[in-house]
Length: 230
Image (cartoon, rainbow, N blue to C red; front, side, top):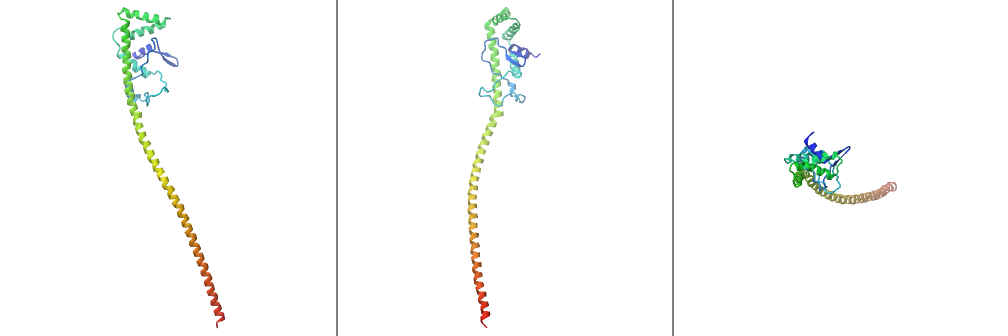
């Protein structure tokens, strides 16, 4: 079993279908999971596209984060009997039906036999909190990079597209106004053409009727002249 998984068992309790944090110390503010390698393309599926700004996103313990943090603690393991060894002793005593007080005191007996003081245990525990804090910083930087790549650049592009859409919408409104104006002029011209055609038709009809009346009269006079003038 990898060393980080052994170390994981000191802090994470595995239960069927779930994982929860093993708490034997007073609950302090838990450092946010962080990892430098989250900036790699392979980890893109793990890092969210944007850092959550509300509490609507509920996090869970995952092996990728645990592995990174445990390996960081393992790499920073202080020589001799320190907090990690003390933590292991406490976890081993969980098999016994002891209270927290008895477990902590019994585990400390081993540390005390090696000349370790409570203050040194506190200092080494703080050392690992500092290590996790650095991992938090690495993760925050990696997340910022991912946000720049996956969100910020796209937001800039989105603003450009929004501006272009507004420009096109304004152009469409202008074209619609021009179309309305052209349609009005079109209707007006059609009406004018119809009036002109109607007038010309009436003029033609009047002329043809008048011409017919006059020519008919002339032809009738010619017929009378032929009949009466001999």
